[in-house]
Length: 100
Image (cartoon, rainbow, N blue to C red; front, side, top):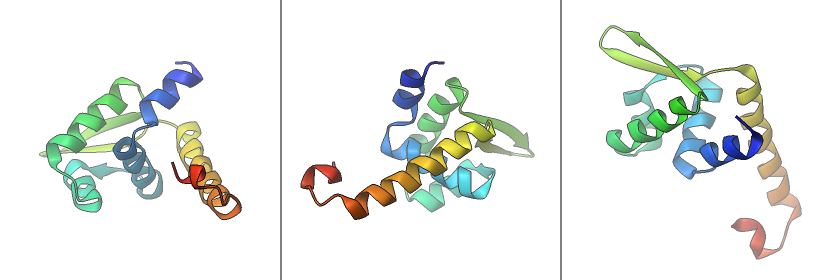
C-alpha cells in the first residue's frame, strides 16, 4: 500500500476515531467501540471491515466476540503522531481554514 492509499483509508472521521481508540486501548470488541463512539453497530462494523481490508486493523475471535487491534506499531505511531500534530497545529493556527 502506498502512502496515498493509506491516507485515503484512514481519512474518514469514524475510521480515524476508531484508530485513535484502538491506539490508546490495544484491542477492543465491536460493542466496546460502539459504546465509546456512541455510534450504531452497523456503522462501526462497516468501518472496521474497510480498515481490515486495508490491513490496518486485525481481528481475533474470543468466544462470541471479535476483538480488533491495530496491525502494527508503525500505524499506531502514525495515528499518535497525526493526533499530536493536529493538537499542535490547532494552537498555532488562527486562520478559520485550520478548522476544516
